[in-house]
Length: 318
Image (cartoon, rainbow, N blue to C red; front, side, top):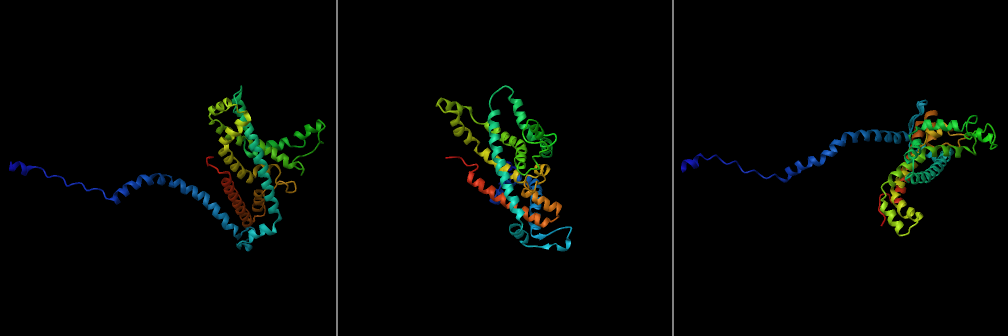
């Protein structure tokens, strides 16, 4: 008996409980793992975004012109003072930019909403109709400008055919006449921009439950009431987001206006981004161009924040 007890193997020491610090260390790794995995991509994106923005704000406080290096140096807020007090073209181009954005966004929204509602219906050839509606959005800006340059050409474009029918006169160029240039460029941009709204709104329309419309019809609601009480409330966030994105893009529009008119005639179609490009590329005054860019950035940021605040984007109606 004594020998059996003596030969019994020694018991392992009792396992100590993990302390709170050890548990926190082991639990921290799984929580941090997603952030560690996206950290390289996040840092890369931050570098691509932060560096240009910081550079623009830095040069906005400088006199920087590579062709006149003897005048380069710290300018403080002189560039901003010049923009607001001594540059009448700044206010002119800013006013036209706001006019351009307002007209384009409103018309593109209305026409895009109408097209989305149309191609959302069931009819023969709906797939082909959707492809034709969305096709202009797949065309690049330069190619779009080339197409409309041919359409507005005074010798071979639409003005010649109208003159053949007795409307207008031969040799009339819509892009060189101050009374017709704005409607001409608006039509050209509408052709490219309307499909953007139609795509986003149609995608949101697909998620509207058919039961809502069936219940509304049972209750005797007309198509008009169904649109304003079912369709529009469901499309609220899609409309807010699409109008905000399109407003920013139209404010920064350069390719179409530059290719069609170059900002002319007589500066009638010069937006603020076109003015900035002209100062930077033609005059090489990168300091003043950076100041105007900073002003445009602040304007867009402030308007976007106010618009999202007023529209209550992402909030459910009570």
